[in-house]
Structures are given as C-alpha cells and as structure tokens.
Image (cartoon, rainbow, N blue to C red; front, side):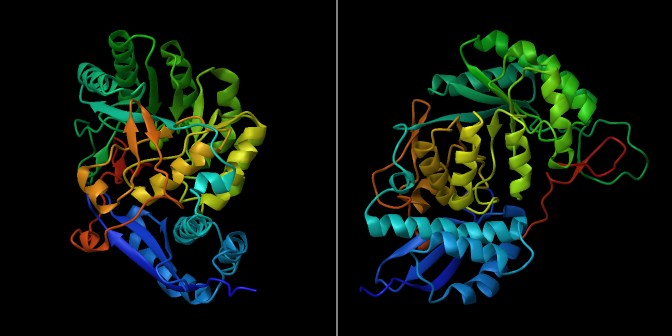
Length: 401
Ligand code: MG
C-alpha cells in the first residue's frame, strides 16, 4: 500500500488587495509541491478566524490524511463541542476548500468533476448597479447591460439609502443612518424608472439587506410585484425566519435568502417549507464546499435553486469554489459576481473571468486558482473599525446593517 498523503503545515494568508480584508488558507502536504487553497474570509472578524485556524485547527490537522475530507469536516465541526458559529465555520471552510483543491490536484481533475461533472459550461452571473438617483442607477445598469450582463441588482444609496438628513435626537451618535419608510418609497420610484429605461428583457434584482420589519417586508414585496424581479434578496433577517410563511402567502415576488446563515436548521426550514426560491448562503460562512453541496442537493429535491453569495469580501479562492459548485449542481440558479480588480487577477492567477454575462472556469485541476504570496504581503490588512455596518435608525438606535 502506498503511504497516505498527510497534512504537514497550515498557513493563514491575510491580505487586502482591493477593498475588504481577505483570509486564505494554504494547506501543505507530505507530497513535495502539493498544496491546496481555501477561503476563510469573515472580513469583519478576520483575526478571530486566523486564531481559530492557527491555534485550534492546525494542531488537530497535522499528520491527518488529506483524502478524508468528509471525516475531517465532521470532526472539525464537533471536536470543539460548540459548533456552527461564523468564526468557526469560516475557519473550517478554509481547510475544507483546500482539501477539495488538493483532492482535485491528486486526481488531475477540476473540482466540478469530482462533484459529479458539469451540468453547464459556465455560470450566469448578476452584478451590482448603484446610484444616488433613479436616473443614475438606470445609467449605471445600462452600462453593465452594454457589457453583456443580463442580470443586474439595482440599489439606490446602497442598502437602505444612506442619509444623515433626519430629525435625530440631540446627542445622537454618528453612524450609517437610514429610514425604512424613505428607503421603501425611494426604491419603488427607482425600480419604476429602471424598468422603464431598461425594458422588460433585462432581469432586475434587489437586496433589502434585512432592513425592514416583517409587516413592512410583506407590503414591500407586494408593492414591487409589478416590476417582475428575478428575485428579492434578504427580505427579512434570520431572526425573523418564521415570518416567511406569511410573506409567501401574500406575494408572488421570488425570494432569495441566506447570506447570513450559519446553521443547517436555518436553510433546512425554509427549503422544507418551500418558502423561498433561491438559497444564497455564503459558502465559507456555512463551512465550505462539503456542506454547500449537500444543501444544493437538498434544495434540488424541493425545486429550489442556488444563488451563492458572491461579494468582494469573499476571496477569489472562494469565488472559484462557488463556480465549481455552480457548474456541477443541477439546482444552480445564478451566481453573484463582484467584478474583480486587476490587482485581484494579478494576486490570484486563475481567478475566473466573465464573458458576455457568463463566468467560465479554466481547465486546471482542483479549484484552478493560485495565490502570489509575495504580492499578498505587499497588501497587508488594515485594522479598522467598520463604519458601514454601524447602521442606525432615525432615532439613533442600532439597526441591522
Ligand atoms: Mg446581499
């Protein structure tokens, strides 16, 4: 019997090439030159993830066989006893995705082949258009359509319409203020204008970013029915999941949910109840490829499709992992795409590219992506206190961002 290939070292690479802070895990093996990469990015708590990997997972992983992805995943999840938290799940994802990358390299196959092979040649993507006014949003969306995109998420003033022009109580703290009422009215006007300018062929999406109360959310989902969205994203917070039954009963607007989910119960309930149309978990946040492929298979049984979270605070390695699942799963719906900068492409050779609205893989084994570590060092992470996540209602109280 040949000697099994084992894990010899684990490196956490933190870098910030063009915006959010990223965490990438590099797993080294007993086979010279064989390593794997995985995304462990929880940008707002990046040092917490690094500590979990370096101080808790690495001592457990050294000497383990790289072939045993499933067993290692299960044990990483349970051997801390407390499980399914965002820091732990992202740490596990870094290792999990790197193990899939390694398995693909050993098999000389892309990860989509390991999963079962391609269901499609490329993944249809949606991209973001924002603006300060309906006209500006429409103009920016038109630019994207001209570049070949057919699915555009439209927002006015990002999430909730940032503004400080409120009648705040004296002494109200600084923050990213928003008013749910103004947000809803402005978004309705914006969607009308964008639909008028772009016509019926282009698919429009919108992200509520869980900023509404359940009653507001139901009314809003009904009010926008006439604009025929491809989907409405994160209409409610995970804390309000039990309202989805009522939402579903009141609107035909397609619903996408899940980028904040950590626990399988969160997506299981919504899928079993057929309460949404798209699951859109953040794959590193749910623990990597291993749980994501199970969720995709489970969703498929209920006719629900995937729309994995694909923001700029997923590392390019994570975007590659999303794409491999997208190419394989029969449940694929759409992929969110963040339009990487040139420095992202330089730092991560193999980062997939979009042609005419479709994201294409390369034919390299594993995840098909690498990292230029020398370049990564030139872009160290900055220690900052996030501001956009300090959301506040008009009276100054804290709100979900
Ligand atoms: Mg979102």
